Image 1 (cartoon, rainbow, N blue to C red):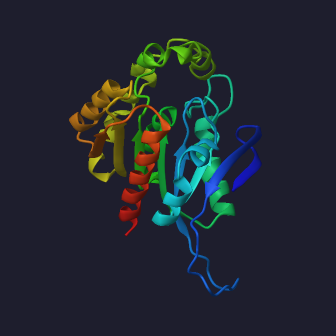
Image 2: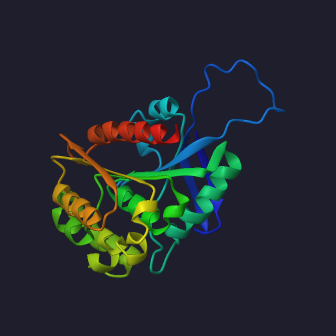
Image 3: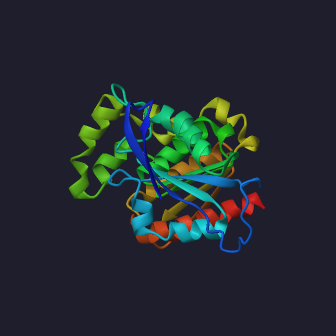
Length: 259
């Protein structure tokens, strides 16, 4: 299903796609009974997509039913899931308003939140999850943008030109530095001091992904800071074929976490 609504934080209309588990074995229907509450996965898209990408290009609805998860796929435009320097407050929207609205409208257990994403959405999942880890039971980065500096020179040639515009809109500069805005900046003393009290951390990467080396570096950084990341790689590029297999694995692992 697709939900369209006005966001108070963004100051504009926005939308989310939602996959709700099938209840094919349900035979008794009563409004007096307490409805089942499901864990929720917030599933984030990449820089060239929108809320509908996951449902158009993967089998995520089937995987959500098998895992007994509600999956919420929001639109984020090209925000990198941050509050823009002079624009919409996307970070605040994702951490505050989106979960409030989804828990108000859907049979979600708000104490069982997970977050995952691909590419820019992988960057967003790490940013949102590691910045406020108490809100999530699991974080998964798939083919994640780890280095903003490398992205604009290593991305496919037909995409490189757009990053100067996007970076200026989000960060206020065409050359954001990883020391301030990259995933390395998330490795704070406060985060590392609670390494044994973090959500479940998953990192999945395709062996032919153009960001493979950056993901290796981020994995090594997390392990060096004793963050218990579960890393896996297998053949695949920066594409929906790999992402379909990865989100199936993510939902399977998160389902096991709920048992």
